[in-house]
Length: 316
Image 1 (cartoon, rainbow, N blue to C red):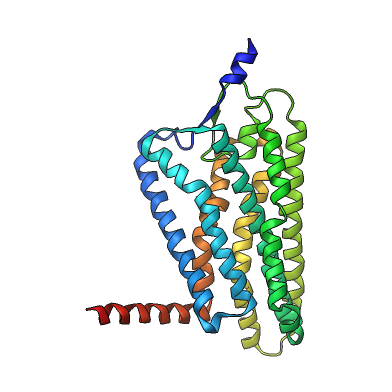
Image 2 (image 1 turned 45 degrees about the vertical axis):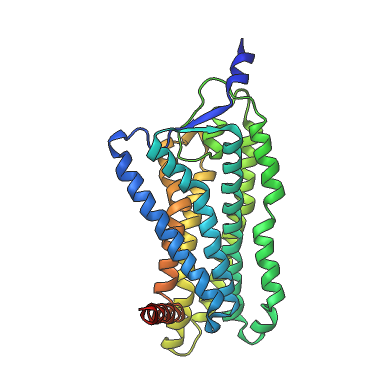
């Protein structure tokens, strides 16, 4: 009877990259290196923006939070993926799967909102520079960051609970490297129309709306920059914005395509590749994009390395 099937499904199997058996160890090495890069580079940016006295403006406060968020975000998917590649045990319990999905959604939403906050910060700095210290005071910055981290949480916990309250029958194989919404809905029995509509609602509310706000901020910013008298000041203003825009395009582009394409066209291979962009490649490229294009960050990094080498020498 079908009831037996339902009670048996206490765990899923994350297929991940099982369709490439000859590449398992290569992928393990590659993702391990990527994870180490994410931890070290974002950790370094977090430390220097917290400790360097020259980097105490709102922009760097948001960047520190963003780097910390990237570490959390990558840590929800990469360690499990590395374990699966290393041991070839791909099983994941229902509770672990629900927890992973909830955290991926929470950190993903926090990232969308934080990127919108960073765009707003650039907008105030460039379009309203005289009032910038007033508008972006420390209390406002704390409130914006707290809001970015927490607004989505109750909604996403409820949504995850709804998905995992569905009954799952038949296959327990998730064709993905983490517990994502659509690959799990594919395994549910019965009608998942409401859950799919809710997924699109979440994507529009927490993905498209921040994205459109960012585009709005940047269209204003660019029209103001073009009115600057000298080419030098134009170039300087553009350089502080371009790094943020690159991260926005990389993250939002892949995430919005993943969650807003019609479900009939959900080719699993494409889904996996797009997910790699927003869960793994953005956290890896973010520090490079920000630090390589930012003189202040590079100077702070040099100071840190200089102090480290002095400490090492003094111990010798």
